[in-house]
Length: 138
Image (cartoon, rainbow, N blue to C red; front, side):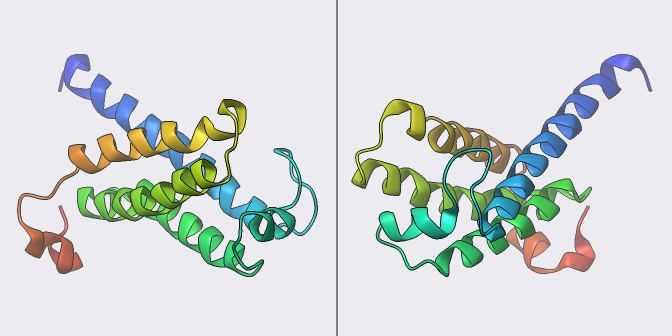
């Protein structure tokens, strides 16, 4: 293999690992009870957004699981992780819109939504049976 064939693969893998790290950190902050590096505790933020405080554990668990799916070396696992994150991020974007947050607070969710949509399209399975039967993952 030449460098031209390996370079895009390394860049894509590095990007996926970076995204997985971001979502894993997001999951950890959802489980953290105190203030985070990004502001007040999510146990305070979720009720302010009209969600029950325990819902942060659900969102954090989904984010953590999807982060792990993103780093597995299978297109199908990456597709599943990115597709579920698209749903979670759609909810995050809607939450920011409904709560009238400014651009500073609302920048990350739409940006990550677009990036995850690109990952979904890049890993779109040729046959849905491949996604439903993990033993056939490529």
